[in-house]
Amino acid sequence: MANPSAWWLNCPYLSRMLAMATVVQTRDLTKEYRGGEVVHALRGVNFTAEQGQFIAVMGASGSGKSTLLHLMGGLDLPTSGQILVEGRDITRMSDRERTLFRRRRVGVIFQAFNLLPTLSAAENVILPLLVDGATRLSFEAKADELLSLVDLAHRRTHRPQALSGGEQQRVAIARALANDPVIVLADEPTGNLDSRHTDEIWQLLRKLASERGCTVIAVTHEARGAAYADRAIVLKDGLTVGEIQVDGTGDAALVAASYTKLAD
Image (spheres, rainbow, N blue to C red):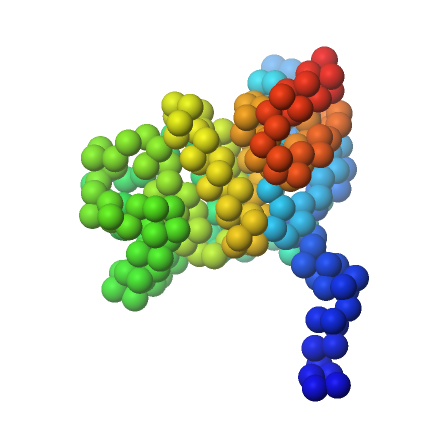
């Protein structure tokens, strides 16, 4: 054998197993909010996402979908249960370890873009790297690479107010990729966009999973967005009530019909 150390490359089963490594897993995840009364946001959710998968999380307002996203990103801690990212239980990390985990392993895309108005598109993209201690000059090429990925290289010097809503969200996506994250979390990423720009963003998220191998997890109430995913998880009252196998077909009618049956 010419290269004995790489014998597994010629073994289809093992190659598939390695390519589909589990990146995110939750085990019996619960979250309670206590005030005047106890709100059970999550009630024992089990969830698995593999490398290169695009997963949509669907559900009505109050179903727990945004809570699930925040917990997986280390933005909050569960009441009980485990969250494993690349095999590490982030619920057992110290505050500092969780901060570094978010900064270096997670990319987050918000509905409201959250770009700094005084910075150019390129400066907004490399901001996470600067926060992590890098020098601006060393990451100019990185900004160009990521802006090219989202088809905005020609807008690198423009500030947010000079960009359309769709362009601002593409800058935000490029920023989320600055640290080469293992997971990209998107919370209603098209909520502020018109239909044309909405489709562009969902297609771009699909591309990140298919071509860059990112694990993309997006919260959405839109069947047209979930139709670009590999599968859609449906939450209701803090529980997983079903899953829709989509396989990136773009079949919004299938997603809508399946979601209605599961969510009712």
